[in-house]
Length: 305
Image (cartoon, rainbow, N blue to C red; front, side, top):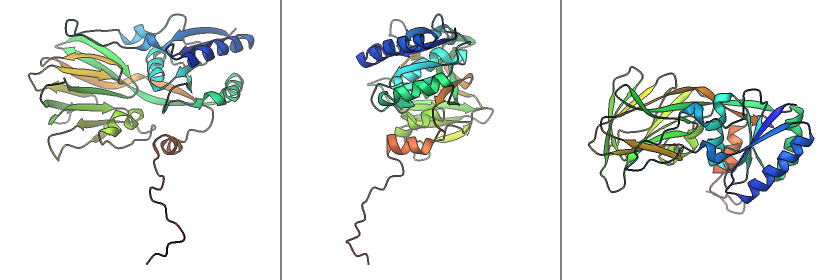
């Protein structure tokens, strides 16, 4: 029998109950079902007395999931989706993402669409959209201290109650640049609608093969977001005596000391989204973020000069 997976947010009662119902439904349709919580993809936060909280990228793969799975189903919000891709992207398993959270920008459907979606899934009536991911590594000399797989972004920022930070950043083989800011965001196209958008970066459609660098509250009018090829790796050197904090996908990270460097590159793994209809990114922008909607009503009863 074919084997499929379910990953759900066990902190949400709705996701827990739906996961059980889906497991029974898929089993009755002839599938072997493996169930796992999204907590397995959480990176964890370092503590001052334990600055490194490291799990290798391939070690986040949950037991009994493998490359033979035609698909897996994710129940939760955007955080669960990000966690699930950290767990399953190395296996190349396509994911159907079902929103049981709030905005659910990364999710494909809502619960009221579930019956039709499962029917399409079982019949193979869907497309797969592949999105690029990013490998984030913390290096000290030639030693790898920490790494993570990122679908959205990496953020390197100052600690609370410390001053603005200085960063020396090298993109590919280009000359390095110096930026003074509260922090630095390097995002994928998927992450351009997340933290980077809030920091003033542009929205990038998911099919464009680029990275985006956006400073957080820069101390210069000349420091603006930069978009560049994702074939060029990024190296960030902290040019400040203060300890910094590195966070991936808003989930977890580690402390970065002045002698460390952060290295980012395009991951060999991709996030494979199951799409039940033709992907339409502008529709998602309009529905989730209100992009392109008129802001001022123009009543026909008013005569314009």
